[in-house]
Amino acid sequence: MVSYINQKEPRFIYGDGQVVEVAESADHAEEKTEVNQDSKEKKSGTTNPQAKEVYTKAGAAFEENRFEEAIELYTQAITLDPKYSSAYFNRALSYAILNKYQEAQQDAEHVMDIEPDSFDAPYVMGIVAEYQQDYQGAKEWYQKSLSKNPNYEQARARLDQLKIKLEKQAEPPGAKSAAAGPAAANATVMEEGQIKKVRWHKSNSSFADLVGMDKEKELIKNNIILAIKKPGLLKVYGKKLGLGVIFYGPPGNGKTYLVNAIAGETNSNVIIARINEIVDMYAGNTEKNMHAIFEQARKNAPCIIFFDELDALGVKRGGGDSGGQEGGQNFMRMAVNQFLQEMDGVEANPEGLFVIGATNQPWDIDPALKRSKRFGESIYIPPPDYKTRKDAFKYNTRNMPVGHLEYGRLARATMGFSQADISEICDKAALIPAVEEDRTGKRRKIKMNDFLGMIKTHGGTLDEWYAMAKKDVISKREVQIVDGKKQEIVKEGKLSPEEKARYKPFIKDVKRNSNRAYIFVKKFVRKFAIYIG
Image (cartoon, rainbow, N blue to C red; front, side, top):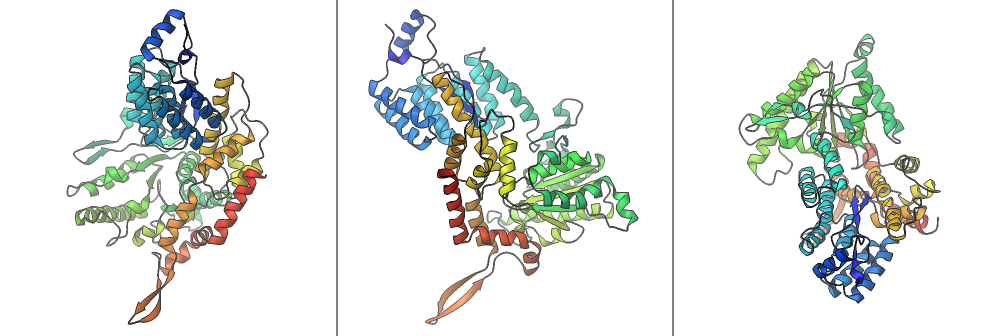
């Protein structure tokens, strides 16, 4: 006799914001023969009927984007039947959608405890690890999945794709290696804390791949691209060649992609300078590592050296936070001093080299780095405005099977969101119809409500960042009582008067986005767009 546990239940594989596989689990595979069912039933036992009923309600909540509610219902099902592996599995999926990766991993581990032969749970562990850019961990999980089922094509396909990611782990998104041979021949090589060889790559990106930022693109064309492509033209008019620029602004708005686009537009090589590779505790290594990066750039000119999170490397000498350890500050001071020397060397002979720094906290960069002819130009990369958000939804859904979408409404519903937020929302919206298709067998296009549901769940990331930035850059008045008398004092932010003038558009943006009235307006516009139109 066939028990209800053996009826096929939906168990989904989640990764990169999409359902990429409907898993056929160890105890939920579609029946092959009655003999297999009987043996499986003896192995797995039966599911509590009440748990099964709650599990079904959880699936309905999931389909309607009510992921928190789905988690609560899956939890109830697990309480009724602690061995209900599918409830653990689908709760893990719900956690993953909400970016709660630790909880997702714990639930997948429960599945593996209940089903030691499960090959889909390790696969999910790999997806979650890969989504967090833990590529080595993901590789090990995919291999474990294949060890359980060598014919599991989805795991094999992901493993093959992962090899490319492992080769490019030092590269930003959109980059492609220019090495003709294996990637290992172009990898960063370190021995005893010293860089012996620096990884570099070429990019296939261009400005056509970047949504919005028309004003910023024009500044970049005039200040960077022309200097790299046609230095002779600038010399004719007596224009001194700049050698560096800082991209600054809120996170998630395309600073790294801009670097790749510049490299693609100018056919330049790119070196990603990483602090964890530069700074070393042994005397002299930090300086040698910094020098090695600039030397490698000269050998591969035209070349762009990209320092992401420049504030962490170029921290103001005599300040900053190095964990309270004097030795840590010494290492960073050595790195900054050597950085300045290398930049001076490029200033003397700038042709073929260009240095780009990106930061979310420009106020923490050593002022000497920002002086003219080092990082003489600073370009603000703002969050997307209405038109850019609208175009971002069009760009991110260009290869998706979408129905009629109100792009203007989506843009209003994401007022104050970053470009990275919008990309993630589009990725995860693709999950909803895939889940429904597995349950019903019916295929449909991605609808407007799928996107609105994901926007409600996501919430955006910039509001919290602006609140943090306000504490660092905006002066505030405080009342203190001294000798029984109230005194009003002004606590200045971290920006000097010169920096306030330099970063004026950024400060204006921080003030506006941390203003209570404007925060209310943003929330009102979002909710109106989501619930009314």
